[in-house]
Image (cartoon, rainbow, N blue to C red; front, side, top):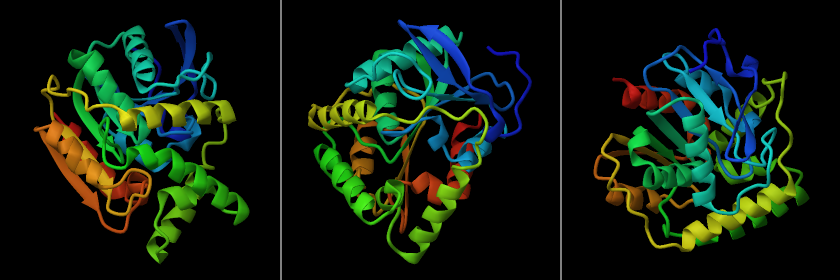
Length: 283
């Protein structure tokens, strides 16, 4: 474990590097040392700067949070993986290289898919699990995620919108206000910002998610610890039926669905989400 002093906020957390599995992986960590750290895995097309500081800072109030870049993303080296299972194998290698034999895991969207694959590959490595805006292998409508993402990104370009506004938030007044506030918060991390996500990374990750959506369900029964599933009722990228589908595979799961919320459910409802996540992770 790191002996570095606690950093007060995600925007100030320095990026660290660790070499394993033939690549160098970038990660910041913050928060007080705890017996079990929390590893957080981000969404499709995201680097470290796409984490909402309110979410990371909230989770880091009482535990060590480690945010990981995937291979080939941001300042991490190598070629971006084109399968969820390969991304999961990298994360298992990184967690072990950091000296941890037990972690809690929080996966957001594609990160939740990677987290599920980590469970199947190294079930004894994971204690408590949080899955937000995610779905199981073969989940309802997941094969359409690639089409929805590409179409929305193109629509955002012609309407001069940030794609995250249209992909993550509803078009209600509440959703539009949440989108503006979220985009403003993403600018707070000004020092040591990550390299921009490339088109090659998008292509590889879109292929990985599409493949995941067409697979047969994976066996998650080896995970004995508590699970928290969070979803938005108006998620266009990962339909909310996936929350139910996940719960059927994870009998220890508690499910929370937020109203008037899309794929960015954790960002829009960051206070309520952080409270629920901290309760879930508290020993």
